[in-house]
Length: 261
Image (cartoon, rainbow, N blue to C red):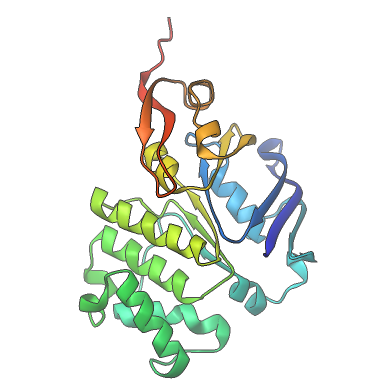
């Protein structure tokens, strides 16, 4: 089991504290969903974990300071899918996915790199689009290509920031199923998302955030209680049965806005 750990991780810009000091340990074989309202600090947490923004505290991968790893070694171990990623060049779908092999020194369509790319294209349902320019694809299709590129890295950890954005319901289910499969296969998967029902269905662990702080951390059935959901999202809730591979759970989901009266 590999561990991605943070101690006293915090982010400030001037006098504004974007991320309150947080201790966090993420492990392989687990799909972790990070939930919270807009501005809760979810994306900031991911970027700080990766060292993509200035932060206080420290992050470690298997006991080694993340800052001590070379960019290539870090890229081999942790794949990152940022929010709202767009494509600027008219590359083919296959060429974009092949870029995921770059940390390993690979850039060809043959050998081990080609096998990985072929598998990922199949997993993401992109084989029929492999020769098409990414600039001709819909926003949802482009997101699937971006995720395919991240999967092609074959990293120990995959951190995805709102990978369900722009996807229709069918593909939301498919993407979450793929990510859950990655976790079952031994990867550490962390997903920032807004759909509480999908998080309850697929996540092994949920982290709740609000106002730049981690408020709670645990299994879905515990985290998605009426009290937690009302407190974090300022909504009324209803109890709902969610079907999971390991059996049904009963959680609280938003029903309507809480009255301000």
